[in-house]
Image (tube, rainbow, N blue to C red; front, side, top):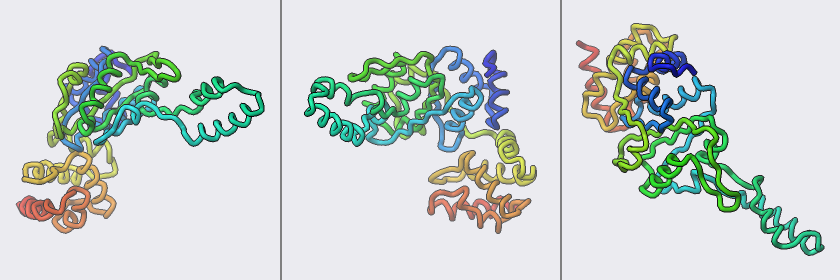
Length: 292
C-alpha cells in the first residue's frame, strides 16, 4: 500500500470501491504512520466496518474480526483450550503412565501444548501480524472488556500462563467501531485516533452507488440516493444508512426498474426500512417526494 500521503490512501481506498473524504483519508494516514488504533463512531450503515475491509484489501493482509456483544470477556477475545481433544489426549496419557512410560508431571505439561490452543481474534492478530484487527461495535461490550482492550493496545502483547507472553512482531492495524449506544471511556479514546463518520452528502452517495453498483443506471442511482437523503430527515426509528441505499438500488435493479416510482418503491421497502413502525412514515414520505 502506498501510504506516502492522505491522497495516496484515498486513491488506494477508491480502488477497492470505498470512497473516503479528505478528513477520513487523513486520519487513516495518521493512524497508519503513527501505528495507532483508529476509533470510528457514527450511525449504523455509514461504512465503518467497510473501511476495515478496504484497509485489509489494500494492505494485502488478513482481516480478523472480533464482534463485540454484551457479556463478552477476555477469554472469548484471546484464547481457549480445546477440552475435547485434551480429554482424549489425557486418556492416552493415563494408559502410558500406568505402563510406566511417562511420569505424571510430563503428562500434565503436555495437556497445555500449542496444538490444543484455540486462538481467538485478538491473539490471532498478534501472532499473525501484519493483519487488520476489526473490533466491531465495541460499545456493546462492558467496562472490563474495554480495560482489557486498552492493555492489549498499549503493549501489543498478551500473557498465556501455560505458554508465556505473545508479542506482535509487527503491530496490527486496529480499527474499532462504535454506534455510540453508550459512551466509551476516555482512556480508550486517548489510545486511539478518533473520527466520526457521518452520512455522505448527495453527490458522494451517488458516487458510492455508481462505484459499488456500476450496473445501476445513473438516473436510478441519483433517485435512490436522493430519496434516502430525504428519508434521513424523517423521524424514523432507524434512518437508512449507505448500506440500505446500496441494497435498495440493487433490489430495484434486480426487478428491472430503471426509474424510481411509488409502486417499485413500495415493493422494495424491505431493503430500506427495518422497523414496522417506520413503514407508514416512509410510504407517506415517498408519496410526497415522488409526486413533487
